[in-house]
Image (cartoon, rainbow, N blue to C red; front, side, top):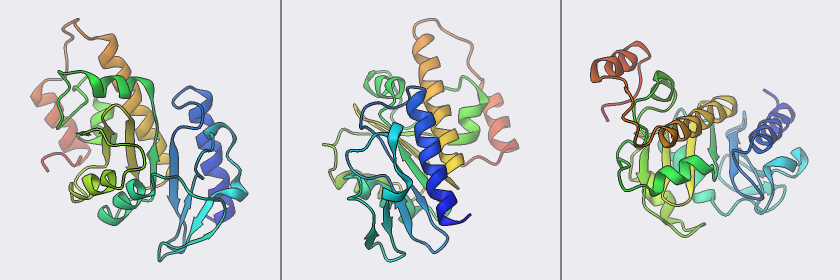
Length: 215
């Protein structure tokens, strides 16, 4: 994909997320690998609803800012995924309401925040790790992701929001939507004792779709 096409795709997908309420105001940030090994990143203080393809922050393959506006303050978070997951071609971070709510509940499993309600979150996300609260922009968020040694494609920052890495920008956005939809489903079913996938059913999905799980 040409850089021009990638710039347009980032802004189109970001606006779609914004228009459907998955993030709001000037919250959230998004990035994607370019063909030369660099990065395109949403600038700081911008809205997903009105990103300008020409003003995306541009990094070269050495991690140097070479064009565009000042990047998001969450760059350490994005860099940590790229540096530890060789398959990462894009990273999306949102302040999605239901995911944030799930991060605050005392019964949420910190090693796997999403209950096994449908096969799709398992297929697209594997296990999602709950990380502790960090002040926005704190480089320690990146350190926490690096501490996972590339073994998770998605994390949920407590009281803050989800972060998902994917092979490309479309896959990362799709997985992020699945995370938020599953979090919403978990909240809707809270206290209802739903019939979740059994351990055998979960294992069948993991095996069939070669999901990173036992790590």
